[in-house]
Length: 179
Image 1 (tube, helix red, strand yellow):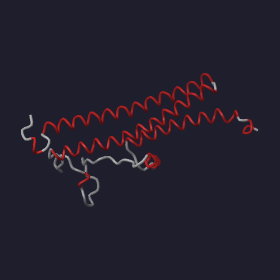
Image 2 (cartoon, rainbow, N blue to C red):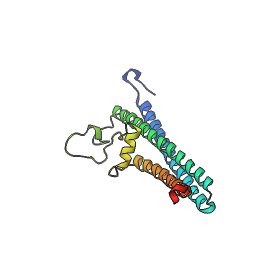
Image 3 (spheres, rainbow, N blue to C red):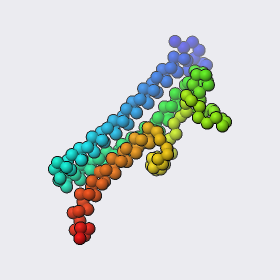
Image 4 (cartoon, rainbow, N blue to C red):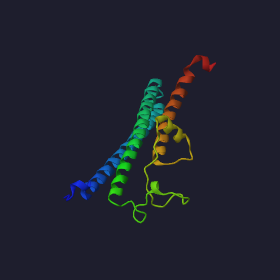
């Protein structure tokens, strides 16, 4: 129970807030991975339909479904990255208020200044793209690696596979291109 309400949030409230923010973060991360899993299953089904039935309409519909799922997946991944930043900011603020953000407990990477570079165990709010197009730019930079970029790249790869299936099935059907 809080004794001094005028001094700001009490210890129990801050701990509860941190726990809730972590649950929200893990729920969002789980949703993000599930969208990628669903897309992988749809892409595998597209390959199976193509090789089993060799039906142009079925392939086109399957590929369109994969492409739509891919674009929704990209949007969900990007949106969750923005929310992830909010959650981490919230968590770090609560940890600071509790006095946990000290170099001997939880080093604050945002507060580190100097030439030491990265400090082991230091925490910071994840970098976030300012816009969807910046996210695409970061995903194209193969020197940058993190979970967000991996998932983003996988969505793009599934979209590319579906587009290639469409092109491989449609181009041979165009008379002007087969002469």
